[in-house]
Amino acid sequence: MKLLKLKNIGTYHLVIMALLFSFTAKADDIEDVEAVINMYIDFETYDGIDDQAELMASDRTYIVNGVRYSNNDRSMELQNASNRVSKRAFPGAVRITTVEDIKIRINGDAAIASFYRVINNINNADSVKAGASVMNSIYQTVSMALFKRDGDWKIVHTHISPTINN
Image (tube, rainbow, N blue to C red; front, side, top):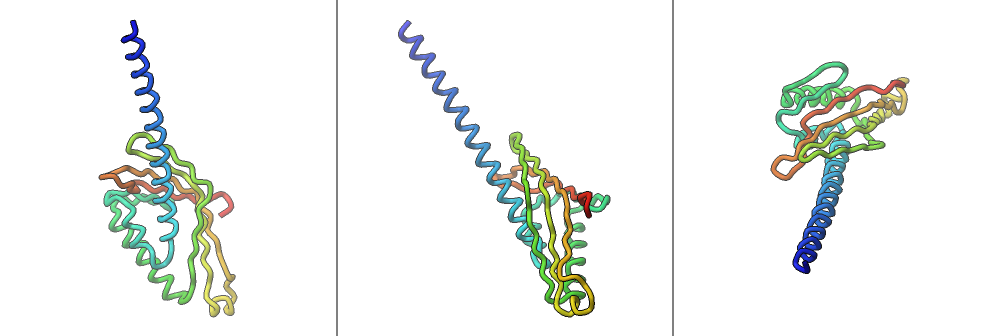
């Protein structure tokens, strides 16, 4: 009888420890996924697109403006080309992007995240003198899927939609 009680107490402690460990692991994963998203946003500059690509799986799917890109290399090439044109057209312009209200759900080695992204493009002095506004902002709703691969969270799917007020 005494042995049975000790065995049950040991099982009870193992269950409690397993639950605590799983909650801690999940909390750590949420923090890691949020860190990837924040880096993604920090690299949302005219020059940061190559750094942003490091956060993505090579097979990432990208949906923006109603168009689906399933070739991540080609998608990043298009984004780089767009940034090069913008830099030439508006030398000295600055892009500052912010993220708000990140929601993350983890299921094993998969994470789903959604958040609001605001891209703020600050024009150069010549553009403002010519009549352009000092800053234009683009408001978007973003959802991402991330997979944990070899211990690192990688973006495998990005879907960007304009917000209603855009």
